[in-house]
Image (tube, rainbow, N blue to C red; front, side, top):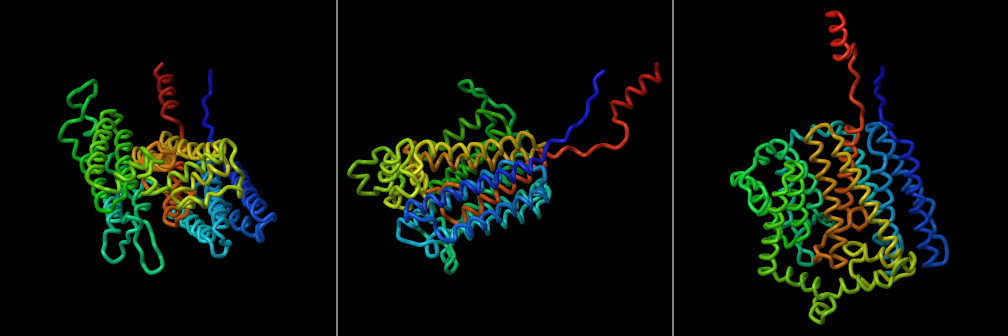
Length: 460
């Protein structure tokens, strides 16, 4: 006779705390390395900066112990390490541009990091159950589309380098599209949970693919037209690709139909070709992609060429933190922070960074698989895929796999709106993972199986 007993999973909070301390130690080592390489001495105030960053990370860890004790124990250390290394590289680029930590971008980024972590902690405290978000499906959709269209307003909308994706109120500027991707992920998850049965109905079979019914093509066509509108009116190729790719991926997860992927790729190719024929800035990016070192491309922009040469100078092991020249590339602290890392930590170090992102996405997808409700599955999968797609688009753009899109690397690149959005995204994933890993409540009294066995014995 075998006895079956339930063993609750380990919470992993002590492991998380140890990994968080290790992550901060790695960041501290990198910061000291930059100081020794650039000035030959340990930067002043090193312990104060390290203590402040450690206090933020440990404080977030304590919130997890309090409100989400079964949350995934690896997400916070990964994000802490990525965010900290981004701060170090931004500070290193400030030094190369002759700026101290007081008047450079790094201090502002550190302040935004603190604000983002506090807001993410508030999300964890307020959002006790992710399923509550399903009540606001259409409200989230309205907010998401409103945020995408907000930069088009004549007073606060601002166009920077040809892309109208910023709003500016006084001295503060913000990119609302970063927040829009979270709102749209909530909307897509709630909508697809309600309609996935209809979207899964088989239609005609063409070339081995079972296509959906014509009446069910409306949602993907609407998403396609909306992404084209973002590309046309805001000239933002990155947000358009991220928005449409997010919807297609969540549609596939909801229906498990490969035909939706085929339809999405077809619509994307058609839209990209039309955009190439109509818009000059898309033609320029394609030229930079296909023939980066041609005289025509260099006359338009030598940013991509300098980024490639910087990574080539780093080679396999890199020049060392503080010993390269990432400042020669424009926007080395934002759009081109991956080439900055590639130059100074080399191909091996860059692969290590990408493995951290891959592990973060894997933990998010694992959370999606373990969640017991359909809305949570779709939301976790959508948020995880948005991080994966954004990383692919950024790394693919700076390495000439695909044309440049203008997106920034999550947690590494400078920018307050990106930090706020991505830390909030991680907080929602942590909340869903707490629900997925938390053991179900025990039912008091005898189980139904035991009662049935007792009844059989009585009948005998």
